[in-house]
Length: 424
Image 1: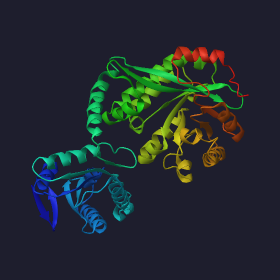
Image 2: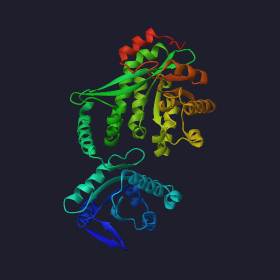
Image 3: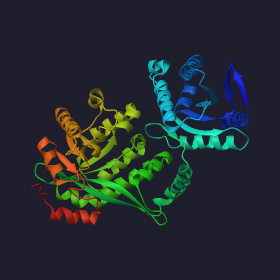
Image 4: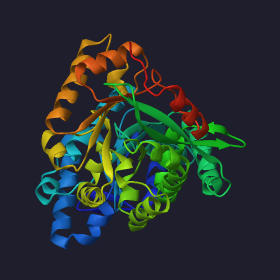
């Protein structure tokens, strides 16, 4: 079940951890630590370097824990920390934050330019034959909720219902394209200088016969996990190209944008699909804008930047979406091949009432101008926001103050009725 190695416990997987906790009667808090990409490094690193990395991991855990908890290795990429007492949510969150901070600054990884991307699932419980299994499962269930920052989660009872729904959605997604359950809506953006509609963002929607309308925040991560995001992105590309072809032809200054994941960027078939769509629907490549988030590109920089550079060499435009919410630095912006930046709605929505938000919006606009990038503000919900953005020098805006996302037929009617959106 478990064996000491150099005085340290190593378990035979999750069942080994359950067996070990079964012998405990005391309550405590369990942290399951997963080091993403560590299994890959265990293959490519030579034995000496792997031992050095493992030793630094052990020392990092032990230096922080200092007898307050026991650390054990579950498998190649997972460790367990068994805290000897029940921590309240605040204490658990503080401990998790400090553990993550320690693991993100390992000297070996910094010197070898490696990223292990730690994440933590946390649960309190008690040992014993049945309780220990539930305790471990709760920690692993919390671990499934850690794909985004802050990269740790504390178990809550409703996570079980959420997991069952997630599983049902995952199964339904496998048939969504085939059953033609996806549809597209388009949100216009306007030039703030003259009110002209210069483009739209294509947004995917999913109407399931049983679940009803499922939000993109729920199904897009599942498409990413399953790998179906590439096929779905190609569907968005071809469907929007077909629906918007004549609309784009009316004014070659118009463009349409859609979100692209790094997984799609890395897929050679996606680049071919772009080339095919341009030819099939007789589009000007400059009318296509690929939106990528700064966080996604940052996490997989080199291949993503190469792919974006190749696409831009073909005339396709690139926009940095959700700007201001990720890891952007001046050096990063200098390296990233981009034509546009989209200011995240979280800064725009309160800019009239919050001076610091307005200041940040102005800073991004000025930065974009200096870098030769077109600046687009998302999430404008009031006319006064549009006017303020115009006065700040922002190029374009989209949001409910302009128009809500709408089907293709409604977009054509809206464009005819609003050849020049009036801000005054």
